[in-house]
Length: 465
Image (cartoon, rainbow, N blue to C red; front, top):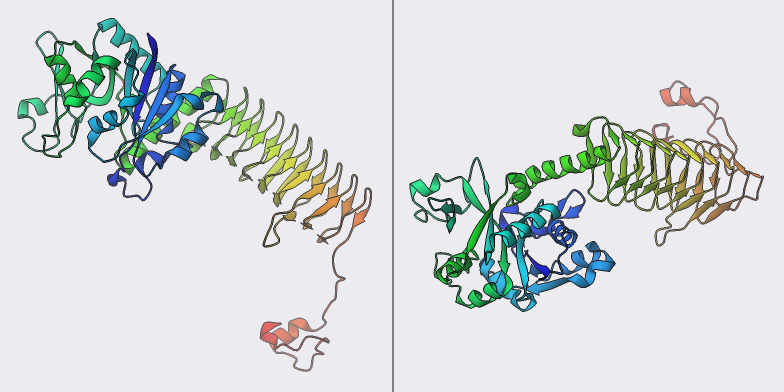
């Protein structure tokens, strides 16, 4: 048998999301909804993954960016020219179907189906010797789902739709086993019946479950594969369901890290995206958010921090309420303290930025120590410029580096300096005006003395002094 073909149906706009963004592009733990089943299919060994998109082709860029280069050749895009149902979506992908392969049908808005679940479905399908297998689950509230009818021996009979009143009898509506919208077909059998799908229904759409009826009528075996965990096949129809799915996905992410040796003090107060990598024995303290493709080394401590698409090496420390933005690299033994923001910057080994600073587009050398309130002024209104700080530099508090500027090894800056020129190695950079004391200023503010001497150049009234 050829490797399976997986179709991911993702052309619907999801009007119940009340959003200008297509439903399957809404974010789930750092990854668009549609990428979850695509990547699960690839992990399950799919030979081909075909994503069915609308004519707007909104998914092309997401797939290009979200699929690893080594697997991109396995992913194709098919266009469903009109919104005519799940059957119409499969028809749109028919030219991509291998008649000799199993064809798995997934939904772009059912993100939590795993590679293991897909593998188990394919195994059950093969063991049953069926031409089609439908995935079912039992829900406490099956409202809105098609009900699965079985015969007296428990064998699959058909799916009863419940889209409008009268589609199902009261007895059928009591059934809690539902069609999840996930299927596996034998490729040739599926291709043979697709042209016979009919839009003779209230919505004038082609329904994929009709394929099951057509196959049974032709004498093919159709099986049902029950999934015990309904969370794996939970669909996203609106933002309430998205929040429910996010809670399940987040819990699974946190449990995966904890089982791999990461300490998470309070999972309920921790947010970690799906593509984050964390080394063994790292401790994540409460109220930490780690976003994007962040990589954290082993034996680190992360507390009260917001990390997005950054790298933290072993032994580095991130303090409470730090914000590490894309491109931030903390090398071994470095420290970023309380209320420090770092963006697109390389913080060298054992370098320290203790607190209340913004470091953007900068290189900070080994063992340098930047004082509180350090700012790299990296933007001139048109372009970003880089600040280069050497090794063992001692920065005074409230120093502003106006890029582009270079500070040599072992240099110092005086507190309150605005550094606009390069500082040679070992030198002290002072960039501030001399202090001037204005006598009688407090009295003048209170109006107690109108005869106070006004310093030269100060002609404003007392209320604006």
